[in-house]
Image (cartoon, rainbow, N blue to C red; front, side):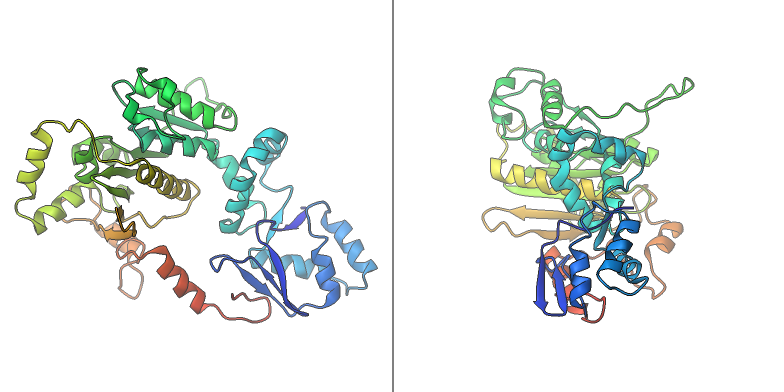
Length: 404
């Protein structure tokens, strides 16, 4: 192990005995009390020395026996410590690719803020390279979203769509102008390859393995505004039955939508959304039938900035899920509309009339804590700023504890 204070967090001394790591409240921590010698030892935790050498440095600085190990242990417990050699064999192989690492270093730094354990950030980064994600839809949102995922290190991105690229599909970060007239899916796949830091590692398959592994996530990013606003449950029926997680994203009439992230059998799906709308509005089925059967819109109201914003947020939610977290789109649709551009969440719970089985007793046991109240992640959603302030207010200062 080569201990390293996470370089993503800027360091500053609040006083002679207290050091603050980080600026933003979501991840900033305060460490103290700390003497001058221990503060000097922090400067040596840069990933270039192993523990034996650090212990020798501690002895030369006159620190008590075991002080180095105690400091390293407490930094690790606080989520401030990384391991410059951690992550396993796959991480070691990735470090050999200097050009790839230079591309992915900002992503690795961001992962270090949410992956608390030493070396956990490299583990997650290398795990991304083995994942398969499918993006259905290669319009202004889908093509950009697919390229973002590839650029962030996701190994295999399969883009599906029909037709040919039109001038209105061209976006910075998505389909380029020179792809106009080409098959939309092929052009999007080329954009994905251009965005990727390198070729993903080949999966080792046994001779008996005939089928490709399933997708870790499927993202539905339709170009048709009706499919964004009122997703057809039939389009995701096979995803529900196969247990494949899927995320919705798109723009309809100047409104951007991200979510829900559907975990089959656990969270609300497109069928639950449709049933809920039928409960609220008796005319909903009639409206949807007219929208679907009417003359197709020649031009969708999908401005470039909003489409890029939706693609970015959807990619962030997808990456959080792929990295093992549960983003707030699980059980909610995040929406933002022009001209105010204020994000708000519309909670979406499992509907008892939906055949997706998300309201089963097993799921209730999983999502309801002992106190009897539903888990906030699955039911009621709040903007990130609200939850950040709540978490910030709950922090307390103290020895080896954090506050901002």
